[in-house]
Image 1 (cartoon, rainbow, N blue to C red):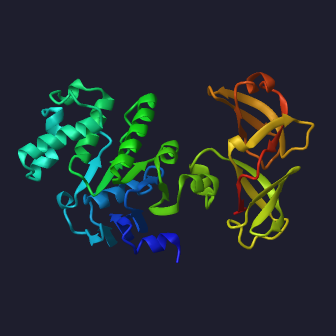
Image 2 (cartoon, rainbow, N blue to C red; image 1 turned 135 degrees about the horizontal axis):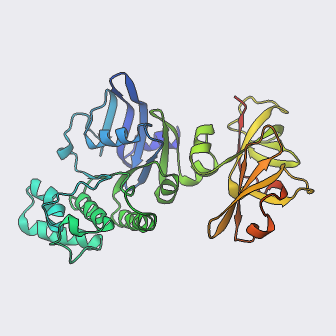
Image 3 (cartoon, rainbow, N blue to C red; image 1 turned 180 degrees about the vertical axis):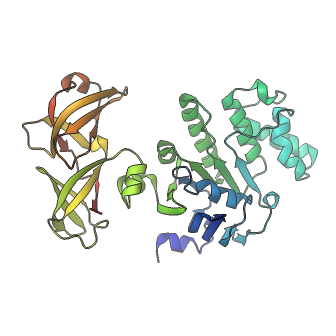
Length: 370
């Protein structure tokens, strides 16, 4: 039994999707999706627009009903349970704050509709605002707040009801880069402090990698891969995941030999050991595509033994590193992206320089030629 199958039958599961299918007319938005979200886990649904991630979130919230399969929250089947009875906290892209209500009124709304006693509402609203660092702003209206403050109000409103599950639908998309980064850190700290099970939807790969305990990469209504950020980034299961999550270079090579559970791939003068798992049945000497992250490539003198040779055609200074773009002298090689730490690469490898490209570690994944 796999680890995912074993937790799917245990008390560790907060939310479970069993072979869930959802159609909109003739369009199949989700096709028999199964996923178990552990209690206290930060699970991210990652994928491009139209992949089904928001549909899955809306099914958990009760905004849609599945056309097949079942959804369980806390072990109880909720396919036909209305949203207000699911004890779900949800935060939307646009925050959906009531403009005529104060900050305190917005946060208290969910408690009032649940008929929580007035003295209890006051205490819990105060605690929620303290948690998101908004104490003292209780009487302001949403229009008097910054974007980050509005987001904190929406988060406090979602958390004040002590939800079984917190659902987040791309909540950082409207924020500028610096504020987005700081809010990501704050959200993760609050989630860990409260231990609330969280399902987070995003199309931003860096956001998914930095926040998640595990993430499910989705495409065309299916989960393509489920794993930790490290597993997804370092060991993508197919070409889609390798290309979608982070930057990747594709180098044509050949399978040199099998070495236990690994294989050695030859790319020019380079030899790289990678997992054999994505290459079932591929024979020695067969052509393969090796996917390598930009930080695992290194620029060398073109006279040195290397995987590829080419010409520097562009430089992008990124502060802590420099992105070098190399046009290769090989019909099977795409333009390569090399990520060089520091800033010395700007002067050492100027545009127009003839260079070699070496692979600096046994990092990468190989796939058979389709």
